[in-house]
Length: 334
Length: 199
Image (cartoon, rainbow over the protein chains, first blue to last red):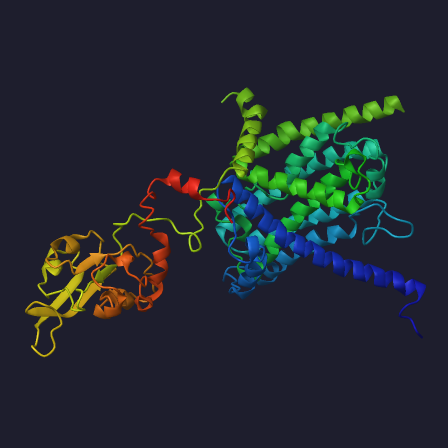
């Protein structure tokens, strides 16, 4: 049987090739997102940023990776060995698997710019990213030491409080688009990007996204100043690297979601359709990554009780109100 | 703090505007190994033992530098010149001359005390090394070689600074005695940097 290139098997080959390509692209993007962050942060702090390795510091991610790989891999005596080793992989695998359903550009006839075009894409993404919390929580818990434990307790509480408001802020978009397919949502933004009618939802999404990915000023889970790195205190070498990769890929993920749901995905700005959709998509994602870094270098870490108060007493009620009003308006206008 | 202040969105935007503006500001970083800060011509750096025009050592082994040194960094052991092999014009010369650069506080008192202007401080400052022992400079590294151009100030020698003084030889480029000295005021350095975003 020559089953290698039948029409049925060629679909699987296409998926496999797409996965490989995507893995490579995402990892490379992660590496340069890190350099991008260090450069931008440096400039904002009146420093030039990394510029010694390669021209303009472009080889810095490579040497960072080599450094992480060569470092000693330590496991504390008090740690639960199995869960301690498993946790970084939970974080990383969930972070990567989200990209299976994210479409990067307009689907052509018979092909999609994604590994799989799922008709409930946004729900799949929300489901997968929720699992990612387990990596952080279990990693901190299994380290068997006090700072990681505090970090993971904080992460659990923070995730619960902010995931709720995040999901509510997304539902407004789903109501306007009338679909949960990511391609469908982007196509329904051809005329008007959703961040205009859903401005409140957009702002809430950006705030909760920063909190969800544990980035400054909501980085209480890591909190280098008080928790010595939080959940990842005991991790070293490549295992720490996996958490690190997962954090940056999560940043990319929420930037992608914000682009798809609020900034019109691959729709061109000002009718400039000669530039391909993928470029627009990447530009918008890059803009979000910049906003992330901008926030980090501007705001100090928020106090823990204020973080919770803000999540429950401000974001959640506002998101609910936004949802009710959106639903009402859509129902009235038919 | 009042509730009004707690959710002061305007203040947040002001903060963002400030960081955004700073991103495009000129960076005060000096790209050190490739671009070196100018030092004053009389900067107190690494020591050097000089010679007379006829190649004889200036040091006469009087140990005044050693006794004036507030950090006890200098060891001098003098010896009598023999008529057949006169190292210095005087009766005595320094058989051993050692400076512990880790103890030295670079105050320049040795320079002041020296009756023959034998010991001087050069503007060289790049002395890093891997072992403590390497910081004890003896005559082989302190004494100016005879062909280096004698009697001149350290940076006026025709062939520059000799290479056998180790990795510090590059310093010549940082001190330009013709242009004079404009370096200690930080603002001046910023003006002389050509690129805005350094690197």
